[in-house]
Image (cartoon, rainbow, N blue to C red; front, side):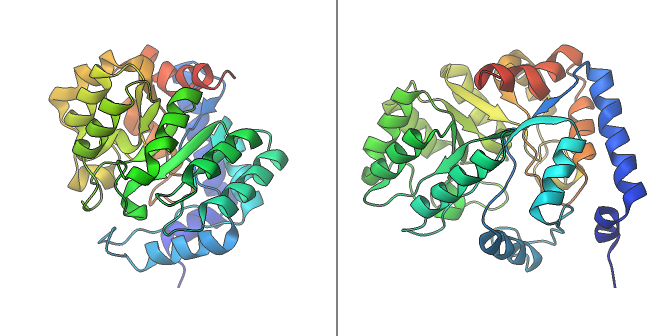
Length: 305
């Protein structure tokens, strides 16, 4: 039996309605296009495994998580472009040693054939991590993904000492899942990242999911370090608010950091519509200039678009 979510992704009129919702949001905000720094494209075999993990509600999820945009690569690209996304990423990440280089090669090829994708790379805490990152930079990587939770490594692992130094020197943003949502693991939370930034204060680190659920602590790191940014992935959505609500008393702090907050969505691996993510940002009440900066201007400036 086809679920409502699956029907939504396959039914043309439903998708047209969602495009209209996104277009109406852009009109209200005053932007023709969006810049989304947290979207996932990866080799089909790996993406299938990721989707299977979500389908099984694995231990890092703990509850049903239907994939709204379970489509082939061409359809997913068309969907993003139909929403008016002018630039996006191919966030991919290894869960064990020996994967990063091949993932980076795939991503380099994907960026070459997908001009609106910001060339994305990744790394793992393993011997040769610095060489992998240096090679990816030489290939033209513009943004990196570091998934502390899935990778199950300490960002302060000595194997990464030179890697972080190289990234700080290059000034290339690193979108980092370091918060403890949806489930805390040994190396998640603000403590390890605070230690990392103390050693590499110039690191341009993008805290994914606004640091969910340790929002206040990661806001404090952004307030302390000018190179720290935050992305909005899943924040404020009904799905996230159920277990990890953003503290409303922290909204003024998020507003004050308006030039360092970036739109992220986790497309296609989200259990709700793309339009819902945008509309929930609007419901924060932080205002049109903040939304315009978050949804377009900050990302365009960061990547020189």
